[in-house]
Length: 147
Image (tube, rainbow, N blue to C red):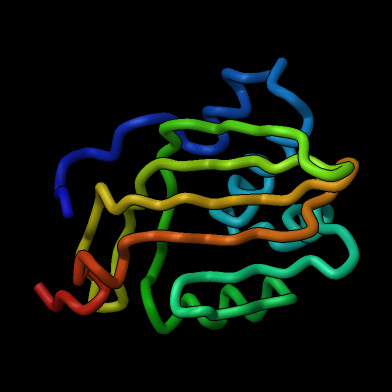
């Protein structure tokens, strides 16, 4: 874990700087920006039928409200700095990989930064149908630190 200032653009900054990015990449990053703002209505508008999310520890969610409730026991807030957004075509859809670092405040009020993450999205048309998330929050111990 690093306590340094977060590096890289936020999802909103990335969107502003990458107006010509492929549509699937913009859909995925716009979803992340909406989730950071806790604008669940905007985030939900990006979801396709049957959308599913899988997080570390095999936590699975079908609804954004379930995700937010599950996160409340882990941290007060979390945000992302993006290092790369990459995409490719896959069986009639697109796959978008977003990687970077997490920063935020755990449930005890302790700040953290520099925690690696990778999000993999499947995008059909202009809708997200799947999100797989990997991160080092548990491995770094930042969620349990009390001071």
